[in-house]
Image (tube, rainbow, N blue to C red; front, side, top):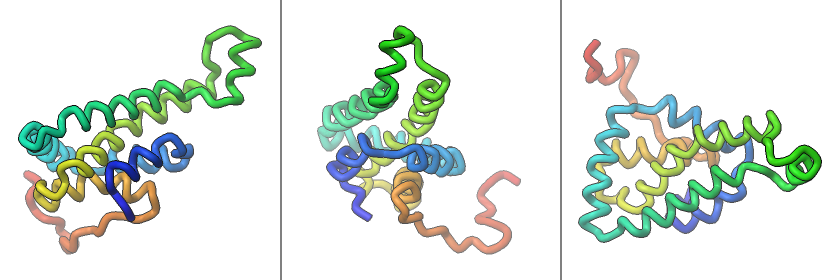
Length: 151
């Protein structure tokens, strides 16, 4: 599966409801600690590589996609009932808002992933890969897990 920035940005406008649900579910089930480290490292890399503006342009596309949650069919509702969104439109907006962090993670991974630690790159890219039908490999940790969580 191609995880290049161009591929991700080209695919975002055509994401369907199931893609959006999978993005959010996979992101929500991820490791927040690894993701936090990846973002700390990734932001430094963006700065060092001079890629901050590219990231900003890409994140603006995500923001526009989230805010453009009204489909062509909703325009009829807006003409007939004013500008208040229907419950269906609100649900679509909520789903897109929930999926946005996974998209931003995928964008960061596309920009700096090769310079991240492998587990950081995997954590950022996994929801995108899952939604696109290519799940990230699962580490073989055995039945007890890695033992790194303070349990």
